[in-house]
Image (cartoon, rainbow, N blue to C red):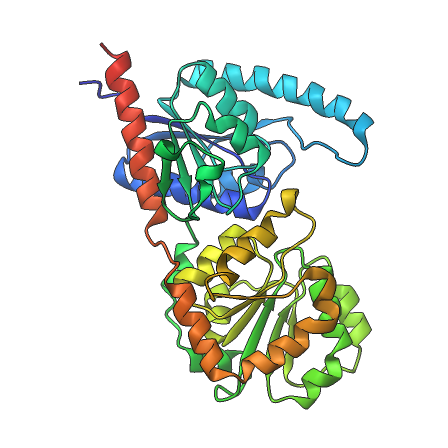
Length: 376
């Protein structure tokens, strides 16, 4: 028996939506195999370079960056960085000698998994969206296993490699110790009146914020209470524009530290359609209005949203129509108890719990199979 610790590379990042699942998978592998040696590979100057060490894991950065679809000449530099990243990834794999490499999406996962597969290391892809991105489509050819969160990805990936696992979500959200009434009161709200939570992501969403600004009077006249997270990027501007005109039933914040409390208070959530957020809504059974971001590759947020809308599990408002339609839609839906209950029931049926644990089992299995082949 080869008793050396399992060696695992986890690669990807760029946004919280990629880093969070990566850390969940790492933690789940550690829980099952405490001796496992886990190394992260990320992109220099991106969020993972701080977040991963803060969570207690080592990380190496590659100079990789995304293609610029608008300014094609800038891509010469991108290609040079990509070539350098592939050389560095090869070096990392040679010195770390992983038994398995995991890609969670984001710039760094491309060169890392390509080089791992080229060295004969088994690779596992985690595709969070209902629509496969370019990198994962290329990497899928040589992947051993592809863990997905939505049905119907056979149109992008070989069916025999697909495992429907769901997306790992923030576990602390699921162990919410606070009930609706207490959560509502912590915001100074009346628990008997409807509460709408508006989240635009950590940086914020311009169109969602403009919708609130355009309908301040409608909000003031209603008995619906709003928790509005503007995002750090927009907070000062929104505060300045509202001035002394803030309705009493509107709480404005740049960032919500205790998401579990905000979710517990909310009867209805308004959000972008990022894969990680959607997985949280499914597990928590929240009624949601989704406003997909138009600024993402291949418009995958709209595809994520439609996967829910087609099952009667979410309401959809286009980004270009948000300023006009979002707040009126939220106000009428907040009072429609039957429709809210129906949305909650339908979204709960899409929940896939224990994702991180199931993915970790696949990671460990691949690593052990690789070990048993190479040690003879």
